[in-house]
Image 1: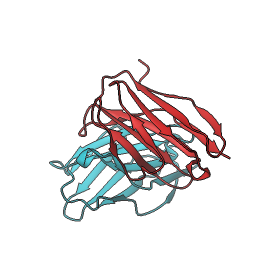
Image 2: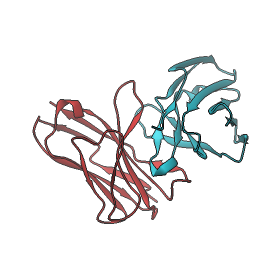
Image 3: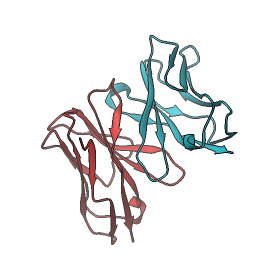
Length: 110
Length: 112
């Protein structure tokens, strides 16, 4: 069945570094992906999305890359700040079900 | 604009008790979802609804029931709570499957 997975459970970076969080998906028919950020004790919040007719989409300090050939997504955070510390999920809302991966915990140290 | 509101925020149940979690959204969204999140794990989809009067099973539906009698509300029921249902429950809603979902703040449920 469909699945959305993440390669690393924890990513530790220093403040000011760029962070890259990866995500693999298995459903080749998936055409829309969403990245969410979840801070401790809160519900997930939308960060950025990308549709399959795009390879790249940029937001404020964040960029999402989509490689449909290898079914891989990445979220890049530029100049990572302590406020970026959270768990990041990629999600695939295909076939009406909004399915999440396990998540990557981003730890930002000063 | 309240967004997605979950009631209650915390609850402790004894094994075998029943309860209903309420999710309300004021964004006129068609899609609504219930998830559970256990420590160290991601969000697992319990049930979802693509419109008023419709419900469907997600990844982990056993032990839960849902109802969507009104478009703005999505109820999650536990008929006979078990300790394995101790978790944080999140509700979400979205306009469609190609738009982002908005989440509530969660309900922390403990079953003893």
